[in-house]
Image 1 (cartoon, rainbow, N blue to C red):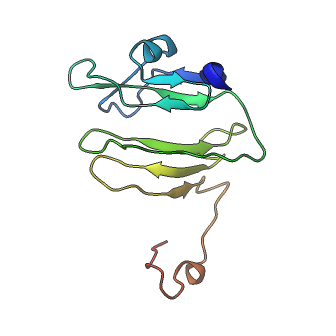
Image 2 (image 1 turned 60 degrees about the vertical axis):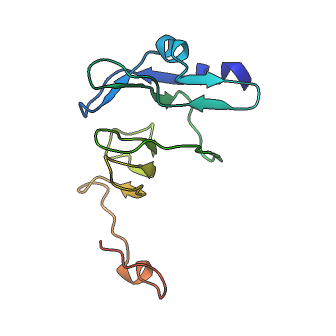
Length: 144
């Protein structure tokens, strides 16, 4: 949608993990060029140094809801290291976490490489993956 792309997103300044991110408001994110929108694409990037031992960042959540969607992402660099947690994930807008589930598409935590995972409520919405389907010949062994 061009320059109005970020109009459909909410910015959260809350850091439940007490990590190295200083989450910015929409206005501050634009001012520090953490979020930008152009006619052909939008950018979300790590920002400059913030408060003591923090890096300016944006935590954004779409205001829209889809039944189906296609998302394309291109990463030029993904920050990693002690105290950083870059992530891209999907949550249900219809139920609180974890009952609505979570799909982690990209998630680095500290200096651990990217992991993709699925989270569900262990009581009401429990599911198990069939180990026989996860350990096909030529695939790495997956532990349930």
